[in-house]
Amino acid sequence: MRTRPNLVYVFADQWRRSAMGCAPYADPVHTPHMDAFAASGVLCTDAISCCPLCSPHRAALLTGKYPFSTGVFTNCKPSLPIAIRDTERTIGDILLGAGYRTGYIGKWHLDVPEERTHRFPESGARRWDAYTPPGPGRHGFQEWLSYGAWDEHLKEHYWKDTPAQIHADKWSVEYETDRAIDFLARHENDREPMCLFLSWNPPHPPYDKLPEGLLEQVPQNIALRPNAVLTGVHNHTREAAPDGAYGSAADMRLTTRRYYAAVQGLDEQFGRLLAALQAYGYGEDTYVVLSADHGDMMGSHALIGKHVWYEESIGIPFVVAGPGVEPGRCGTVIGSPDIAPTLLGLLGIPVPDCMEGIDCAEDIRSHMAREDKMTFIGARPGLDCYLKEFAQAGLDPAAFGWRGVRTKKYTLVADAGYLPQKDNACGWLLYDLVHDPYALHPQVPDMTDGEAQRLGRLLARHLQKENDPFCTRLSKGLREE
Image (cartoon, rainbow, N blue to C red):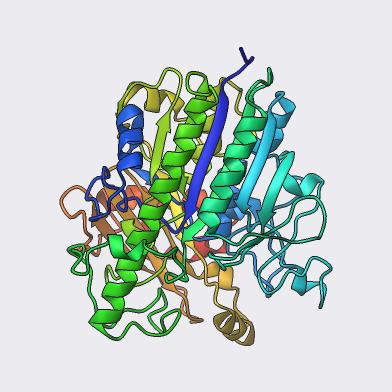
């Protein structure tokens, strides 16, 4: 018997909460393995990506801290020196110190891209990609098979402990699941507990890079969400869409089918992983968590991608099964910074003071829906072309974008936009998640009274604590206490 429970944390990129058959307000996607897994454990209905972008969520997931505290408040990219600091104490560091055998497989996206500092990196990394060498930058993960940010889903590359690339000639999700099963097999008889993080890139775009046969499993006339459209779809700036404008209904419907097909492929690989856990004897003393880093609008509100405050973007799957977890649902709001403390709570390991998130392990075990629990959300301008405009105007892009609060009943958002404007004002929006789950009827709240004012003040205090320059924009309309 191992001294502590094992942990297997599986998360996909750009996989929204609704794209799972058992989810509330579910999309028409076929996920039998995930649904059965959720029926055997606890489905958390209100898990939230606090900043719906890859790098900010990943940093918050590992550190238990909000993005501005980690310094990773937008994606790690060649134009900015943003990366997770070697000095951050992550869950990987903590579990290694607690005697765990640790492993990380798949997308990392927490380092400065190598082309920012080297024209021709020895590793061959290009654009947003980076090799993470052994050392503190791996944050406690001993066994490593990873890459920074690259989207060749059908022919991905990886690094282990040298700059030499390892090439996989199959869908990345299948290859990474193969390697995860190898990890389980090699440590089947260990007395020390193990922790494995498995990070899948799909259904992140490009949406068309799918294994043969997956798309055919999704009906051509797939149903859409009530707030979805098929024409005039753009990204979060509403200026242009990634991978070209989705100008025709046929294009958008095909993209939606491809997205659901990728999710159904994830389901198949997740089923393989669950079978391996049983076959190698990990069933009784292992926590398995299934999640994502953020969602995808996929045409809802005429948007594609992430980086906005709607549930399709910030809502992520979060399912937990393991020792002491009886089947049920947990309705407590669990934000990105809460995940590491919650995992430590499940494993019976003390949460360090450096973590800002809250341990929700007892909420999961007792199937709670805590009404007073909330998480802070937000995003900053990230497109390079707009960053240049901010610089030319002498403005700090970190003071723009949007910030908000997600509670059990409401989403409150302060929006200053993604384009440089000298006016310090921001617009407020309030969404009633109970009576308007598809966010079709946003309210312009009275910020001088009532629940909106209370949440606005909490948001202002949080931004001040995080030294977020956006806090200067919240004063308009907020009555002093």
